[in-house]
Image (cartoon, rainbow, N blue to C red; front, side, top):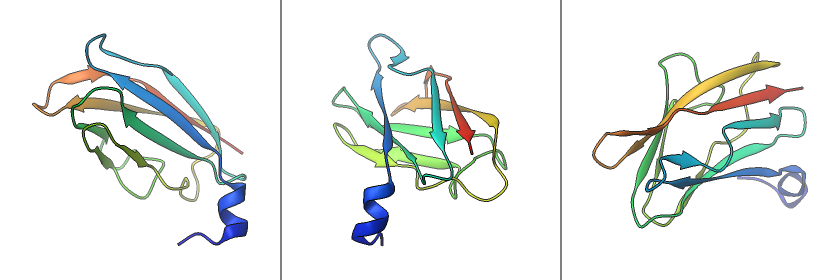
Length: 108
């Protein structure tokens, strides 16, 4: 659980998922590890989505994130040893179909 001081330091990089257009509003998401920034994915549609990083290739604690329909999910901060690198991920719709394939860029 974040304290009030820690929460103030976190700036989420919001990513909107639009299935109808097969897009996210940000193809590349730069976040700062030193500022404890996180990614927050949310659905513009009334549909659930999954964010999936390749096994062993996630910059976060988890390799998968599940976004409820009309909701959002945060990545949490980047884990140790993941600076100055890009990480591709896949957005899957509720049927397992790929919507788009963007990336997260972790900076110092």
